[in-house]
Image (cartoon, rainbow, N blue to C red; front, top):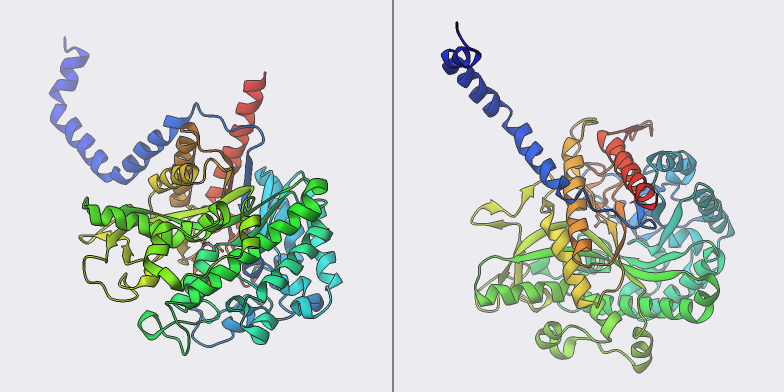
Length: 521
Ligand code: FCB
């Protein structure tokens, strides 16, 4: 009689062929499956009970209502009206109409189970003329209602004072960030916000990504106020070597002034925390040479440490002082006094990583690493034609989850364990239809969260994670062509439709809570 094994053996060639065909045809699934198994390697990890899970947004990208209830023009309202600035010719006049639809959007957040919402305030809504005019009480009322609604749902507001948008009045009047006067304006604005909202807002960030703001606004000229030198971009005026340094200096001094106001006038009674949110890029050396490894340090010095070193240590990074020398602005004694306590936390926006190549010992063009402003580092996502990590349809964005872990460890070590919040991380894809089955976003979030857990295991004091973003929205110079939402938005009807990633994130948060309950039991 034929045994089972001999039967299998007799059919072996057919069976084997089928197996190979299945394996090859499902290799994409197989790759994903493998990486999902790796993800679960951290499955025994549990987040602390009070860890913040949220979604992030910003006023210009979400609110719309650009001239409603006394708001005046912001720099982004003006910039988007200049032909050619935004890839699809769009603007944020309506955006995703969050100004009117926030209750519906908070319903979505409540359903996800998040316990925090990172949002920014529109300065031009609160102080339409800056310190040269009155507080717009309609703007205050709007944010008051919104903050109350957020809290009523058991969600913690995590508020940024300015996420790139400022009243255009300050640009017209004195050239905004290039003028030291802006510090008084920012201080006044921060004071108003603490006064009206600080009894309920316990997390304040002064700025969102000031490094991106000055590099794109004053070195490359692709963001307002579109200033740069010829070699760096297409601008009618500017000085890419000097203006970013001046704008950054005024931003740092404005940050310190706002922190000082908070510490001296409000913090004791209101008991909140104040920090700053930085964009981060993890840099890998393009080769093992000493020159390229030193280039990596300069890359961080000229990107992240440029802002954080002065705020935490009271001076610009060594690499910057060496290269920029006397052109680096100086801090006053008062600035330095307040810098001693310049942060309660650091917000880390982490999306991508790049290779860094030395340009001190090899020739590079200005704008491609060959300038003082860039620290003589060329950073790029490719090496020998191959990408670092996995490319996406978005030009600045490669997927490299290791970068999350390394960036959190780097910040932890350099800034002596200051608490960290991952204030943004998310996946963007080109606008190619509705795409509700966003499996790549789910994989992205799983892998980056896994990297975040590894950093926490190694000792990084990470206290929150905010995904960018709840909804598709206005993606700056890419307009509505890139989508980052857990919810798809039909920009004509404003209808929100959940993607797979929304249910994945909901489940992820649910499991974290269940784990906490289990640990407590
Ligand atoms: C960050 C910005 C945020 C959003 C994401 C995709 O750099 O802070 O507003 O545009 O990128």
